[in-house]
Image (cartoon, rainbow, N blue to C red):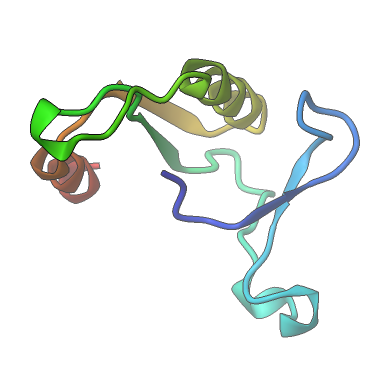
Length: 99
């Protein structure tokens, strides 16, 4: 779960250094995430691969690799990254509240 929109350029495992954007390139710099701060901020990854039986959702293979790639890329960009696995809705809400 990512709450920011990022476009990746050349250089990282997914194409490079990220430049965050708002509603689009024509929106201007007002809605861009500044990447010139020493401390970039927090990036929370919620990797839900397994689900409770009552949801009738199947296990999502491949999510661990995706989560690992996100973790690496955002660490390289200077973010403090938190990776959480198989969270319930209540646990996800608590993560967003407590950060």
